[in-house]
Image 1 (tube, rainbow, N blue to C red):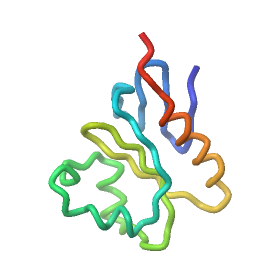
Image 2: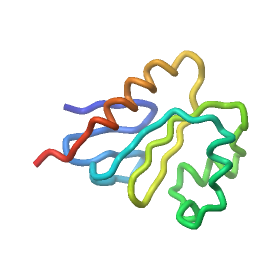
Image 3: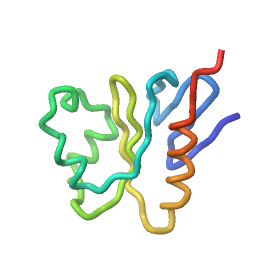
Image 4: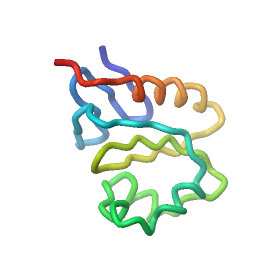
Length: 103
């Protein structure tokens, strides 16, 4: 079974975005406001940015905008959301949060 949302693919053993693939271990997904993302930019592990989050920061995270943040032990992917995609993003976040690695 494969679930997809906004370029993020949740597969049987890994989660993928663009060319980045990570194991389904320690995953979480949340819907966050831009100001929440900006609040933890100074945290040491946030400095190890993946390409997607780095691009968002370069473009400028909007304080009032809403994002899907998928986090793992050593990464964070953020996808901007519009009002029309919010329900689908929540459903995808629930699937990510329920995901456990399948042997």
